[in-house]
Length: 395
Image (cartoon, one colour):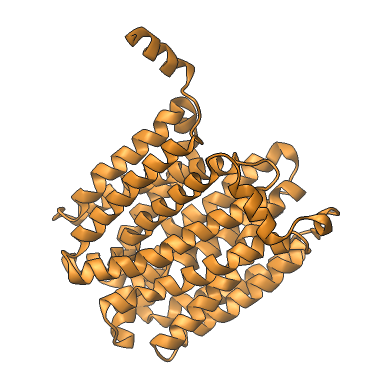
C-alpha cells in the first residue's frame, strides 16, 4: 500500500509541476514567440481552461469507468501533449498543446482523490490524502524551480522533461496500481447535470463555491505574473526566478506537514486570520526593493495558503456526504476557471495600469470578497468552546 500512496504523490507532483511551470517561463516564452505581456498570459490560461472545462465532466463520467484505465490513458495523453509543448513552433500551437495538456490532466487528478477511499484502508485515508496533497506542494517547492533551471538550456527543456517523466509515471500506474472498477451502483447514478443540480441545492453551496472561485481568481492573478514582475523589476533571469519560487514552494510544503495542527488548535479563527494576513501582505509586495524581503514574503504567503487550501476543500466536502466526487470536480473547475480568467485580467492590469501594484490590489479585493462570501455561506464551523467562553465573559 505504501507503493500506491507514493505513486499518488508522484502523479500529483508531475501534474502540479506542469500546472505551474508556465508562469516563471512567461518572460522567456514572450520573447521566443514575439507576443505582448498581455497575450503571454494566455499560455497559462490555455492549460487552465482545458482543465476547467473537462474537469466538470471527467469526474462524474469516470465514476462509471475503471479508474486505473482512466489514469493510464490520461497520463499517456498528458505526456504526449506536454512533449508537443516543448516543440511548439509558434504561439498558437503552444496554446493548443497547453489546452490539450490541461484536458488530459483533468482526467488524471480527480482519479487520485476518488481512488484513495476505494483502495486505501480506512485508517490510512487521511494520511494518503495528505501525501497526495504534498505532491502539489513539493511541485511548487522543487518541480517548478527545477523546471526554471532546466529552462536555462532552452525553454523547450522543461516541457520535454515533464513529458518523459509522465510516460514513466504511466508505466508505474500500470505495474503498481491495482484494478479499480466502477462501483456496482454507478450505472444507477443520476445524470451529470442532475448531480450538480442536487449539489448546488445544498444550503450555502452556491456562495461557498463562488467564494472558492473568487479566492482562486485572486490567487492566480498574482501567481501568473510573478515571473514577469521579478524579471521587470529586479532583472532576474529564469534560473533566478526559480530560486524565488523555491521559497514559495518551501512555505507551501512546510504548511502541508505542520499547518493542520495550527488549524486544529485555532479552529475557525485560523481561516479568518489567515485571510486577513494575506490581505495585508499582498499590497506590500510591489513596494519591496529587496529580493530577500520578497522571498520571505512569498514564504509566509504560501505557508498561509498551504493551510487555507485544504481547509477550504474540507469546508466544500462538508456540503454533502453523497457527492464528494462531484464536489471535487466542481472545486477543480472553479480553481481552473479562476486561473483562466485571472491571467487574462492580470495581463490587462499589468500592462495598462500600474504594473504589479494593480495586480496585487486586485488580489486583495478578491480575497476580501471571498472571505465575506465564505462567512455568509454558513459553511465555516461554529465557534470553538474557547471562543464561546470569551464571548460570554465579554457579555
